[in-house]
Image (tube, rainbow, N blue to C red; front, side, top):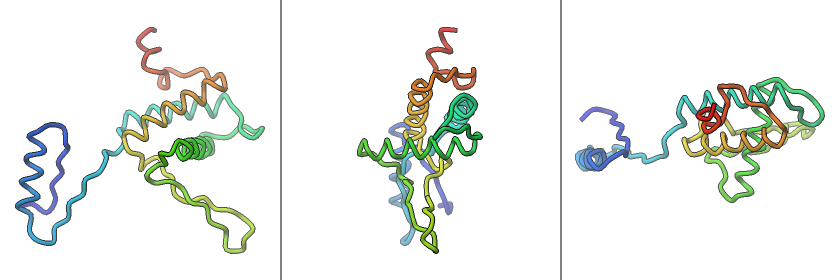
Length: 149
């Protein structure tokens, strides 16, 4: 048996192979079952959305660059997920600075989104942008609008 095997639960045969690998694994081996990580296409979509949002909107009365806008909308998305009772699996934490004069946010990284979280983030960004009259670039267009064009 190799040191590491990955099984994607896409069909019955994959499940059978995974079960066989678990049954044959030496004592002390570990098994992890987890949601799949986001896809590259999802990442490209939400980065295009964030770029459009950063170019066309303000937040707290100020225009922000793409990196700052990304932090802002991820925080807004995380709060919406918390309020819905489905916090992100890598939700943030707020801690005071050592001198107690600032608050530091730790945690949320879009690179750690699961497929389902990335899909929800994309939908959140469409709603966020729609509420602010964002005109989507070709890369950020909702799928249905692309098909109609």
